[in-house]
Length: 358
Image 1 (cartoon, rainbow, N blue to C red):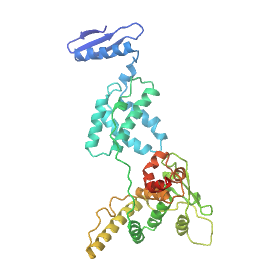
Image 2: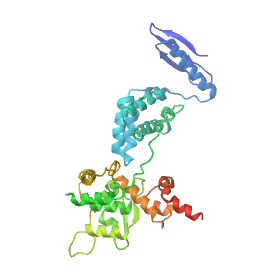
Image 3: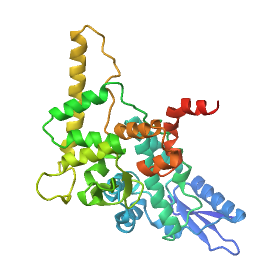
Image 4: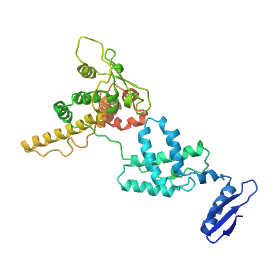
């Protein structure tokens, strides 16, 4: 049984002495808090899940975040973005002792992020990062807790994956505007994306050393030449005849027949991304103007809500529609890590599957 005694005029001390356990003592301002703490510790002792928390009571979340940034984050390929998230988490929870943070505190933080307009995926990234810090402290750094409080916080459901397909005529209009743009790599980059299902970051990282036009293979690497999004060193992608023609148009002309060295798309990344967005906007403007000339109501969905990554979805869908690749073959081309990631493309072949049933 815990002993609760008054210490001075403004505090209460709770002390627990039990055979086989170290003496536990803690001081509180209110007697009710001391009694609640004592009941919790004794309950853990009864159930055999007690952990000595002296170190966990001293260390703060801010201390753990600082150590995590030094020892764990630098080894990650997303270290820059994770560091920014860790800094924001430290602003919010840095002053909390490790034992003081509770699921309800994190839930309030989650709700605040959602109300501020943060996407569910972003909120989940924040929560998972905080959970990772606490898990590292518990498993590797010797700070005991009964459970990771962030693990008990419900994550917001992410929206369904994008399934935007190019509508009839959209590709032609987009490529036309890309050709009109001053950026010389914009149009071939869009066309190659539709042929290879490559991510934009992979296209920017593509070097001539990674291209074999004779064997019709390109090795796509991740951002800045690192691993791909799914942590592969590279992804070997077969090149269609059209993809080979696109790359040949990008090869500098001259007497030397061998491929040059360096980036295939030697252009400013930010400027090229902006150029793609503006090309779509201009294509939309021309489309609306054409509809007005012939007095036809424009399609409200035409050339709307299109991002560069939608080209990857379009290219993957087209691979299925060819009817010559199975799911494993498509996955090897697109770099999807699991077949479950490809499930949203299979409905495109439902009619073909029905025909196989007889």
